[in-house]
Picture 1 (cartoon, rainbow, N blue to C red):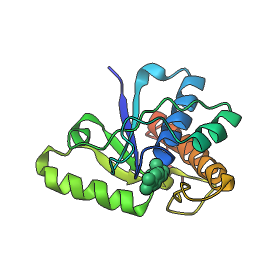
Picture 2 (spheres, rainbow, N blue to C red):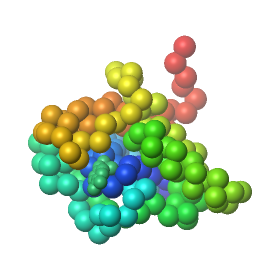
Picture 3 (cartoon, rainbow, N blue to C red):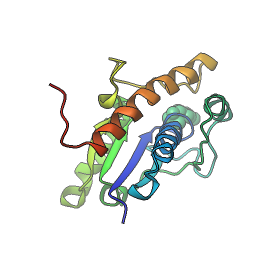
Picture 4 (cartoon, rainbow, N blue to C red):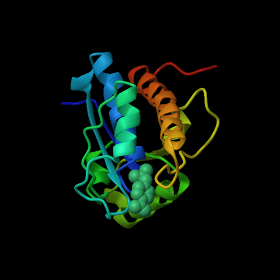
Amino acid sequence: MAEHRVLFVCLGNICRSPAAEGVFLHLVKQRDLVDSFVVDSAGTGGWHVGQPADQRMQAAANRRGIHLPSRARQLAMSDLTSFDLILTMDQDNLDAVQSLSREAGGRSTATIQPMLGYARRHQTRDIPDPYYGGEAGFEHVLDLLEDACEGLLETLTNPAKHPE
Ligand code: 4NP
Protein backbone atom coordinates (compact mmCIF):
# COMPACT_ATOMS: atom_id res chain seq x y z
CA MET A 1 0.00 0.00 0.00
CA ALA A 2 1.14 3.57 -0.72
CA GLU A 3 2.85 5.27 2.24
CA HIS A 4 1.61 8.77 1.38
CA ARG A 5 -1.74 9.90 -0.03
CA VAL A 6 -1.49 13.53 -1.15
CA LEU A 7 -4.29 15.72 -2.57
CA PHE A 8 -3.65 19.16 -4.10
CA VAL A 9 -6.58 21.60 -3.98
CA CYS A 10 -7.34 24.90 -5.75
CA LEU A 11 -10.54 26.63 -6.87
CA GLY A 12 -11.26 25.34 -10.39
CA ASN A 13 -8.94 22.28 -10.57
CA ILE A 14 -7.86 23.27 -14.09
CA CYS A 15 -4.76 25.43 -13.41
CA ARG A 16 -2.88 25.35 -10.11
CA SER A 17 -3.74 22.03 -8.49
CA PRO A 18 -3.42 19.94 -11.70
CA ALA A 19 -0.03 21.62 -12.15
CA ALA A 20 0.92 20.74 -8.56
CA GLU A 21 -0.15 17.14 -9.19
CA GLY A 22 1.87 16.96 -12.43
CA VAL A 23 5.00 18.58 -10.97
CA PHE A 24 4.91 16.34 -7.89
CA LEU A 25 4.31 13.17 -9.95
CA HIS A 26 7.21 14.18 -12.21
CA LEU A 27 9.56 14.35 -9.19
CA VAL A 28 8.19 11.11 -7.72
CA LYS A 29 8.81 9.30 -11.03
CA GLN A 30 12.32 10.78 -11.36
CA ARG A 31 13.18 9.38 -7.91
CA ASP A 32 11.55 6.00 -8.63
CA LEU A 33 9.05 6.43 -5.77
CA VAL A 34 5.79 5.89 -7.67
CA ASP A 35 4.72 2.93 -5.50
CA SER A 36 5.02 5.04 -2.32
CA PHE A 37 2.49 7.70 -3.36
CA VAL A 38 -1.15 8.21 -4.28
CA VAL A 39 -1.39 11.70 -5.83
CA ASP A 40 -4.54 13.52 -6.97
CA SER A 41 -6.03 17.01 -7.24
CA ALA A 42 -9.47 18.59 -6.78
CA GLY A 43 -11.22 21.95 -6.86
CA THR A 44 -13.36 23.57 -4.19
CA GLY A 45 -15.68 24.68 -7.04
CA GLY A 46 -17.40 22.40 -9.53
CA TRP A 47 -17.59 24.53 -12.71
CA HIS A 48 -14.96 22.62 -14.68
CA VAL A 49 -15.67 19.04 -13.58
CA GLY A 50 -14.50 16.53 -16.20
CA GLN A 51 -12.23 18.98 -18.02
CA PRO A 52 -8.49 18.49 -18.62
CA ALA A 53 -6.08 21.11 -17.29
CA ASP A 54 -6.30 24.53 -18.97
CA GLN A 55 -4.43 24.51 -22.33
CA ARG A 56 -2.17 27.37 -21.20
CA MET A 57 -1.22 25.49 -18.03
CA GLN A 58 -0.57 22.30 -20.01
CA ALA A 59 1.58 24.17 -22.55
CA ALA A 60 3.68 25.83 -19.84
CA ALA A 61 4.16 22.48 -18.05
CA ASN A 62 5.01 20.67 -21.31
CA ARG A 63 7.77 23.21 -21.99
CA ARG A 64 9.37 21.97 -18.76
CA GLY A 65 8.88 18.32 -19.74
CA ILE A 66 5.97 17.89 -17.32
CA HIS A 67 2.71 16.12 -18.26
CA LEU A 68 -0.56 17.07 -16.52
CA PRO A 69 -2.80 13.96 -16.40
CA SER A 70 -5.66 15.48 -14.40
CA ARG A 71 -9.39 15.67 -15.18
CA ALA A 72 -11.14 18.21 -12.96
CA ARG A 73 -13.24 17.01 -10.07
CA GLN A 74 -14.77 18.71 -7.06
CA LEU A 75 -13.44 18.18 -3.55
CA ALA A 76 -15.63 15.70 -1.62
CA MET A 77 -16.11 15.03 2.08
CA SER A 78 -14.60 11.56 1.53
CA ASP A 79 -11.29 13.19 0.51
CA LEU A 80 -10.85 14.23 4.14
CA THR A 81 -10.45 10.57 5.09
CA SER A 82 -9.01 9.12 1.84
CA PHE A 83 -5.96 11.41 1.86
CA ASP A 84 -3.33 11.91 4.61
CA LEU A 85 -2.29 15.32 3.39
CA ILE A 86 -4.37 18.02 1.64
CA LEU A 87 -2.33 20.92 0.26
CA THR A 88 -4.05 24.16 -0.70
CA MET A 89 -2.85 26.74 -3.22
CA ASP A 90 -4.16 29.93 -1.54
CA GLN A 91 -5.89 31.22 1.58
CA ASP A 92 -9.40 30.91 0.07
CA ASN A 93 -8.77 27.24 -0.72
CA LEU A 94 -7.42 26.71 2.81
CA ASP A 95 -10.50 28.33 4.36
CA ALA A 96 -12.81 26.20 2.16
CA VAL A 97 -11.09 22.91 3.00
CA GLN A 98 -10.94 23.74 6.72
CA SER A 99 -14.64 24.60 6.65
CA LEU A 100 -15.47 21.25 5.02
CA SER A 101 -13.28 19.56 7.61
CA ARG A 102 -15.23 21.21 10.43
CA GLU A 103 -18.46 19.95 8.83
CA ALA A 104 -17.00 16.44 8.70
CA GLY A 105 -16.15 16.65 12.42
CA GLY A 106 -14.29 13.62 13.78
CA ARG A 107 -14.43 11.82 10.42
CA SER A 108 -11.86 14.22 8.96
CA THR A 109 -8.40 12.72 9.41
CA ALA A 110 -6.34 14.53 6.75
CA THR A 111 -3.71 17.12 7.63
CA ILE A 112 -4.59 20.36 5.79
CA GLN A 113 -1.74 22.76 4.96
CA PRO A 114 -0.80 25.59 2.56
CA MET A 115 1.36 24.24 -0.27
CA LEU A 116 3.82 27.11 -0.11
CA GLY A 117 4.69 26.21 3.46
CA TYR A 118 7.02 23.68 1.76
CA ALA A 119 8.73 26.22 -0.54
CA ARG A 120 12.37 27.05 0.28
CA ARG A 121 13.28 29.68 -2.31
CA HIS A 122 10.01 31.68 -2.24
CA GLN A 123 8.60 33.49 0.78
CA THR A 124 5.10 34.16 -0.54
CA ARG A 125 2.12 32.36 1.03
CA ASP A 126 -0.37 32.15 -1.87
CA ILE A 127 -0.05 30.80 -5.41
CA PRO A 128 -1.87 33.46 -7.48
CA ASP A 129 -4.73 32.30 -9.70
CA PRO A 130 -3.37 32.58 -13.29
CA TYR A 131 -6.72 32.02 -15.03
CA TYR A 132 -7.46 35.62 -16.07
CA GLY A 133 -3.86 36.69 -16.69
CA GLY A 134 -1.15 36.17 -19.31
CA GLU A 135 1.47 33.52 -19.96
CA ALA A 136 3.85 34.84 -17.30
CA GLY A 137 1.31 33.93 -14.63
CA PHE A 138 1.42 30.27 -15.62
CA GLU A 139 5.23 30.26 -15.56
CA HIS A 140 5.17 31.85 -12.10
CA VAL A 141 2.78 29.15 -10.85
CA LEU A 142 5.23 26.48 -12.05
CA ASP A 143 8.23 28.26 -10.47
CA LEU A 144 6.43 28.30 -7.12
CA LEU A 145 5.22 24.72 -7.47
CA GLU A 146 8.62 23.29 -8.45
CA ASP A 147 10.08 24.85 -5.30
CA ALA A 148 7.25 23.65 -3.02
CA CYS A 149 7.05 20.15 -4.55
CA GLU A 150 10.79 19.63 -4.00
CA GLY A 151 10.40 20.70 -0.37
CA LEU A 152 7.34 18.50 0.09
CA LEU A 153 9.00 15.40 -1.33
CA GLU A 154 12.12 16.02 0.75
CA THR A 155 9.99 16.38 3.90
CA LEU A 156 7.89 13.27 3.22
CA THR A 157 10.86 11.08 2.36
CA ASN A 158 13.13 12.35 5.19
CA PRO A 159 10.64 12.93 8.03
CA ALA A 160 13.30 12.83 10.75
CA LYS A 161 15.47 15.53 9.17
CA HIS A 162 14.59 18.99 10.46
CA PRO A 163 16.42 22.18 9.48
CA GLU A 164 18.32 23.84 12.36
P1 4NP B 1 -7.49 27.23 -10.61
O1 4NP B 1 -7.87 28.48 -11.55
O2 4NP B 1 -8.26 27.41 -9.31
O3 4NP B 1 -6.03 27.36 -10.43
O4 4NP B 1 -7.94 26.00 -11.39
C1 4NP B 1 -9.18 28.83 -11.87
C2 4NP B 1 -9.76 28.33 -12.98
C3 4NP B 1 -11.06 28.70 -13.34
C4 4NP B 1 -11.75 29.59 -12.55
C5 4NP B 1 -11.17 30.09 -11.40
C6 4NP B 1 -9.89 29.71 -11.07
N1 4NP B 1 -13.05 30.01 -12.91
O5 4NP B 1 -13.59 30.87 -12.23
O6 4NP B 1 -13.60 29.50 -13.88
